[in-house]
Length: 466
Image (cartoon, rainbow, N blue to C red):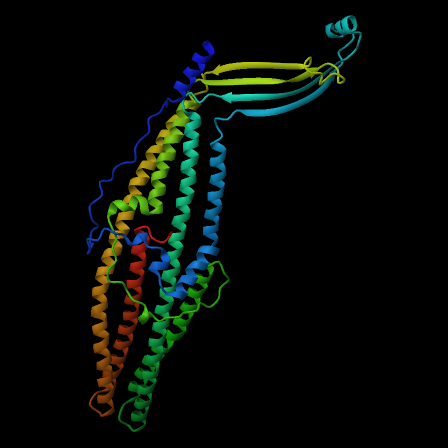
């Protein structure tokens, strides 16, 4: 009856937890993001990336990056490592069992007490001992130490999964933005080449006028300078295109190579209605925020392990097997059987404050994870708000820039006609051509910035890992 009461007492104590968990702080998030222009509570983060990026070429690039990117493969290996640790931690309540087989012989001195005793009682100068035994050891989880280790391993495993999601969301964003940058560079290269042809035509006319004595050499020199300025842009854009293609290839886990484009910048639509959802959804949708929350759980578990280490540990051991002084009757059953059972209670007393220090350090680490969680939530909300305001203001800039480019193209055409008819001077033509070049390059940059902003919004609300 006493044994039953003892084990019942162990079960009750094992349900105890010597440390109190700290809850994830309530951030009191707003009901809507700053600069949000829609009241739709459904977030685009819930869209799979193949539904958000619909162009086939871009999908193939992203798919290749997800499959072959080295950073993502490392994240997957981290998951496998954490999963093995978790499986091992879940076996913490199971006793350890070891098998030990020994055979030894001992010959004491003939003049020693053992030697004289052997000669007197056994008639032998040496003694043999043969043992085959299984040893069992089990620690009662009285203070929740083993349970806390399991919780820590689980939180670590879940963090590695969130880390993989975070890496994937960043890869999806980087590949898509790199692809859009390629389309922008293609567009700007086309603008530069078109403007170079226009400058060549103007330069030929001015040279003819110079030969006819209608203009000075200054007009020819300024026209040549304008033509060279446009020509310089072409190798610059070609260089940037090659560098961007190399970067995308490396992201996709391939050697640097050309990247196929099946569309142009003008043909890529910019979504006018993108909903960021509610700020509260970031806690469950963004992998980095979820990882920061899991870090608090893991820190709580580590505090529990450190605190439980300061309390008594109850260990039960048992050993049983066969033992004999002669090999011939080593396995003579039941005569050679033996068994022992013991229980020990160990209470740390003085370890130069190591256990106390470990406990205090664990609490400090927990406080750090709480601060980091708060900061991660603030950064996440800020990134979404930034993306929303960029989308809104870039739309306005695009409208203005498109009108300006259209006006300047008309002005360039008119200046060319007036110049050919002698109603405008060469400076007006050069200025018009320079302005239209800059406006069309700027228009391509704004379009690319709009696409980048939509990608940033998709990533910042937690999209890209589905």
